[in-house]
Image 1 (tube, helix red, strand yellow):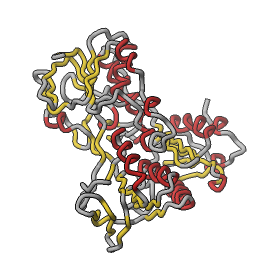
Image 2 (tube, rainbow, N blue to C red; image 1 turned 90 degrees about the vertical axis):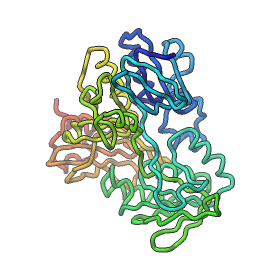
Image 3 (cartoon, rainbow, N blue to C red; image 1 turned 90 degrees about the horizontal axis):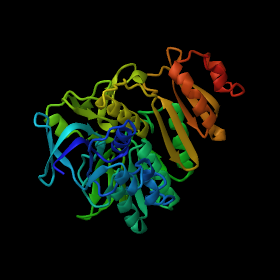
Image 4 (cartoon, one colour; image 1 turned 135 degrees about the horizontal axis):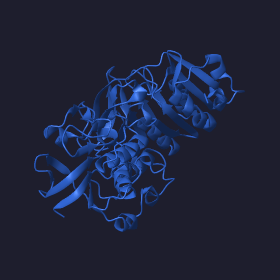
Length: 409
């Protein structure tokens, strides 16, 4: 194929949903999805959860079966990567030198795991958790591993630590800041998860600075900290965020930096080119209009629908409610809203019971809620976040009153 009416660059959640949405909205032209992995579109969150734990086979991770894409006339070009974009000629160039023209393009490339910048970062045995190949490489090495150091106390690091502890490995988790989940949750939730991981045997250390990774010339053997101490490690898992995969767009003149900038309809500053998902920097109402990137399946799927509608001439402004989840041990964390900028918190329930919620307030308004094994609070609290409800903290904390009774009619 040397041209497609719509090219979708990226075969993850956003790319797959974009193709599905275009067909659902009646688009009958040609669609080409280009993915740099060999697999058809699959779910990424289970990579650090059920798939790494071997609780779920990879075949169950496919977003749609192969026949679906054939039936919908969506062409898949896998194991290929777009390396440059010519917006004037409306063409892309692939890593094998092939040129393909487009009418419109949806950029849904996500990002690459941020790597350590210290000496030894490229040793064998050092892994991110972003692709099936990453998870498979970890599992292949695990039988020969006793000691694992996890660097990064965000969702990926904590989920990986939980799984590796389950497999009986000695796990040390290092977080550079003074608490885990510092960028996404308040201190109370951080303290709860730190205690949980320590109770499961994880040696969790905050304010920990990595100086270098030590090795035998090829493979990692340890992690040297800034204080000079050395942790033995036959495997290192790095979960310190992602770098948006937008270099070809920026080189082509698109506005952006930490991601590519998009308008409320997910269009970039380049004509006929849209961007969605982890790599799209957008003004978000739940962040008081701040320009942010949202790294979540929800955001990728919702922006995919927005881009499809805009391309087909029925534009809608993006305004979806952010939500996230994380599975660690027997704990299911569900979040609605964005807690950044909160000035008060209310804990609902008792963390000792391992079922509770934390509501985040800003100037008296509910802006987010974290729910640990509290599905009802999660389902009912969504409306409070969307309404930015102003409710007395004592009432929010009263577990005898369901959150649904506090929703304004």
